[in-house]
Amino acid sequence: MNKEENQSLIDSLLALISKVEQKEVYQIIASELLNYAPLSDTQNRIVRIWEWSELIRKE
Image 1 (tube, rainbow, N blue to C red):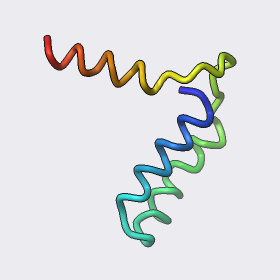
Image 2 (image 1 turned 45 degrees about the horizontal axis):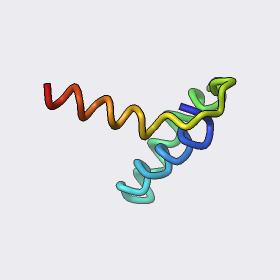
Image 3 (image 1 turned 120 degrees about the horizontal axis):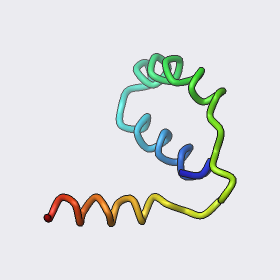
């Protein structure tokens, strides 16, 4: 995923838990975010990943 998609996914997942849990989870993933190297191609992939997942699930 590109940088924007990655951040959107993290924000969406963190929104599902309490503020206290968000802080704890964010601390866990913070080092991974520091080392995250986004793909050089900024093409959005999340929709394509979802479509492929649905095809796999249905087969």
